[in-house]
Amino acid sequence: MTVAVGQRGSTTPDGVLVQEAAAGSGESYGALYDRYAPEIFNYCLRISGSRDDAADATHEAFLNVLRRLQDDDRPVLEFAPYLFATARNETYALMRRGNRVYPAESLPEEKGGATDAVTDPERAALLRDSQDEVRAANARLAPRHREVLALRELGERSYGEIGQIMGISENGAAQLIWRARMKFRAALTAGAVASVVAMSADCERAQVLLTRIQDGEPVDDPDRSWLDYHLDECGSCRAARGMLLEVGATYGAWLPLAGLVGMREETLTAAGNLVGADWSGVAAGPPGGSGGGGSAAGGSAGGLRRAASP
Image 1 (spheres, one colour):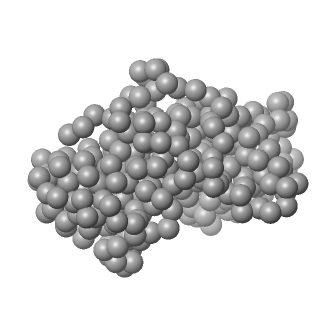
Image 2 (image 1 turned 60 degrees about the horizontal axis):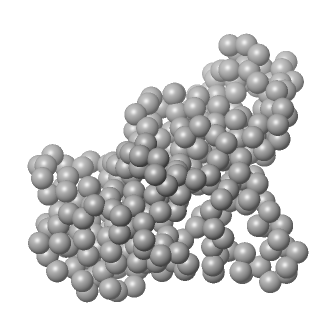
């Protein structure tokens, strides 16, 4: 059961919060925002490379979901995949406009970020360098590869959820994750990935199975037995197993960023206006969960001012 992190309660299921938000509860809408906004913002950021675009896409995604709840009697059965798919569409729409897209490695340095918690200057510098390398490698990937890595490595979304969000099958998600990890490693260390490229249909099958196992996805016993036999015979796929661990650890060095100042207040205020309710008290209050969008340091709400108002 998915639980809320917001003020509405730490054990309230998504479905209850969604129904209450659709009926006009600003507190329930705020709880949904506090739970999902940080992950949605970082997901959009890693696709687009622009903090302003990520803020705008997050803002519009939450408003569009509320519009959907207001205008359509059909229930939103799985809120998280629906919200991510909405944010995905908003992000790609902003990127197509092409008016403020810039490489992820050019992002301005966060104030009050994770490196501030590292008191050793040498360790702080190493952390910044590792994050810079990951951002630069990510920026060289195709948008779909950036997207699937964010969903899996950052959000730890299941293959089924990733398929729902991206409009592909679960098996297609597994294959895309594998290719994205290979491309990411190649972007980090040019040419080093050649030794783990699938050499045959059996290798491709093995490497997708390795991906599923690495991510805790179900693999049946016959496939596991076949994989063990294949790994005994194939040095390339044994190397692939090590590559998966390496990519996960390396990508994890890129710590999530806080959202822009004012994101939470502006979105909740706009949402209240959309349903004809006064949610100013909820909007002005502190986020219910840790890492909520309204508590970010650095930046401005300039990106949100460009978002369409309801």
